[in-house]
Length: 78
Image 1 (tube, one colour):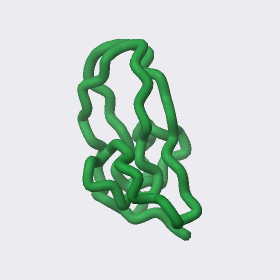
Image 2 (cartoon, one colour; image 1 turned 60 degrees about the vertical axis):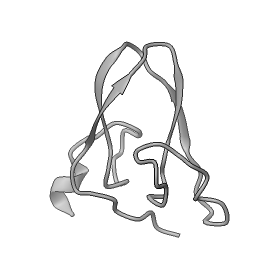
Image 3 (cartoon, one colour; image 1 turned 120 degrees about the horizontal axis):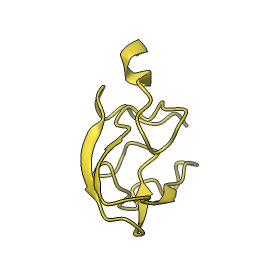
Image 4 (tube, rainbow, N blue to C red; image 1 turned 90 degrees about the vertical axis):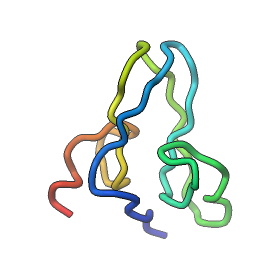
């Protein structure tokens, strides 16, 4: 299954350094950009990551990034 494009822009998200987050890779979560379990049965799974530092991070909204969970500008070519 292909992920759903949620938006063609990143989500500016406040993260807490050292905390583990689960980035939605399927695009079905109602809690974007984080996983809410909506991927079940899709063959896709969330991407766990630990925030390196506290502050704003730009998490991918198009689900096409090559640097998950962070935006790499892939949305510009969709």
